[in-house]
Amino acid sequence: MVVEGKFREDLFYRLNVITLGLPPLRERKEDVPQLAEHFLRKFCAENNRTGLQFSPEALKVMMDYNWPGNVRELENAVERAVVLASGAVLGTELLPEQLFENGAPASHSFPVESLEGRSLFEIMEDCERRVILDMLGRTNWSQTDAAERFKIPLSTLNQKIKRLQIAVKRRREA
Image: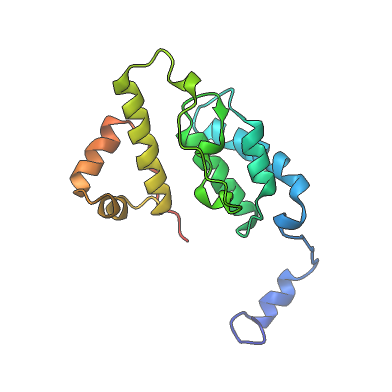
């Protein structure tokens, strides 16, 4: 970038005291479980959740994925799973679709244990919450964009967010 004139040369040399080479996550997949657990603890704390853990199948999917977005993509996938979780076990149904690039589709069925003792209304609210959270994540937390993709008025989406007690995050700069 210095050669292209996009970065100040003096600043580059000031910052370039020590160069650390860090291979991409796809070349160090043995780090995935430890990083996933770190992010799990972080997002459990942020969302006041306790006792969550990844299923062995979810860990396998994460280990098999190539992570083109590197550690940030892993962090986002873990955050999504924590936010969407309704039970203690984070299964493959909570992972983003792109992690199933090998052709195995994600299971979007609810684990049977998460349905036990719950009314249909509770199950439907949980499903609606998951879908809204997923769309907000896909739209960088833009409620306007999410409402457009759902093909509903923004006011309707805002009512649902309020009724479902969804904590809306600030938009993250991409």
